[in-house]
Amino acid sequence: MRLFLIRHGETQWNKWQKIQGQVNIPLNETGEAEARKLSEILRNKKFDVIYTSPLNRSKDTAGIVFGHDAVIIIEPLIIEMAFGIYEGFNYGNLDIDKNHDLYTYFYDRKNYVPPKGGESIQQVTDRAKAFLNKMLNQHRNETVIAFSHGAFINCAISVVLDLIPLQEKLIRPIKNCSVTVLNNKSGQLEVEQEAVDVIRGEILIL
Image 1: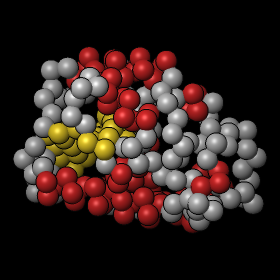
Image 2: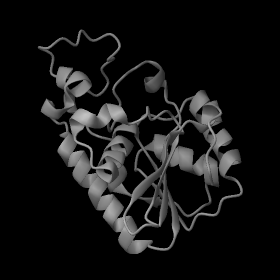
Image 3: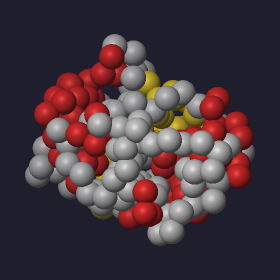
Image 4: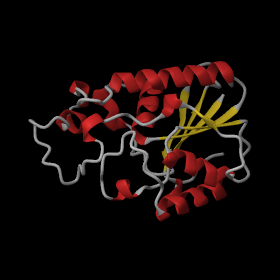
């Protein structure tokens, strides 16, 4: 199996540095343009199946890339990490010192305790493991593409590289419409290409 993990295009909340989590924010004009550019990059690549998170920013990215008449499967496992009561907060303006609930998420992730209504990193990691196992079982000899979110893709990469939260800074920044490719050609999943920023000219090997 070869799995292409795509982060959705830009939203206005991305631009405003607001925590989205599972709030259903749509793409903005920049995000739509990013999805069209990604469509051009992938236009000659055949995928056996297309998955998307239930959130509109991912669904609409997939729809722009493949056309809204394409068969696109909604997969709840790959929804973004829930941040509970902090969804909608502007993290660029928050005074995140050591007494703030989100301090450990940004600066000491191994000790992160989710706020009310939020998910732990382990919960998202467990979802990533479940999704990857599902892909391996159902699409062993196929090429799959899945449209998801930054925190989820970060956890999926961590699973494959066997990283603990303390080591997550080793992962490249997962920018809007970046592409991560996982491959199990060796008998176990490997990161073939990590967070390729195709929108800004980085080269994706199809």
